[in-house]
Length: 262
Image 1 (cartoon, rainbow, N blue to C red):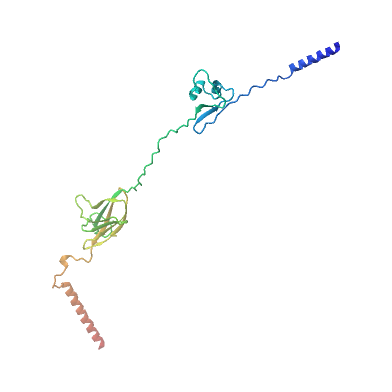
Image 2 (image 1 turned 45 degrees about the vertical axis):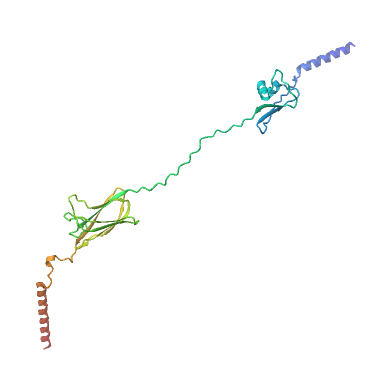
């Protein structure tokens, strides 16, 4: 009998030691449930009362104060009677109205930039080209009376003028405020003169430029001095002498051929 008792005590002590050396098994913690109600279409957030709920429990579950819960649902008095299945308002969904920003300002339509075109000046000189070299040399004077014409390539300019003789200020005939561009400048000779230069010159006028064009003219060889023109009904002595010599030469040739025939 003592033998069995000893064995029982030994087994009991072994089980106790085994329990002390084994891993401790913790009791499972109570599971916590969090309730997140969905807002209804009208924005109200509703909580459905469950069995065992109280005002303080509902407030804690929904993260609001008990006082706020009472105000939302009109609960007064010290007690807070709740019924299972009852709907409690716990909040309102606020839709934030976007703050209107500054209205975009319409960019004004800017006018199409106009191409800048400056202005220049054209001067014309007609000179008496005594030596006929087509250059204005020292001692050669300006001739008045030449008809000037200036036109542009676009057909918008047609200016006329007249050349002048050299004056005290030595200013030729000039045309100012001509828009830059391509022009054609021509001069017609006064009576009794022939051109020694081209009388029609193309010109590219740049803004701010003053272009001076020289045209040359020389007295016509067909123009005789007025004192050498014989008066009407008069004969030139030189022509009479030349005519007499021609008559004598003709007689001499006739006599010579007569002697040859004999």
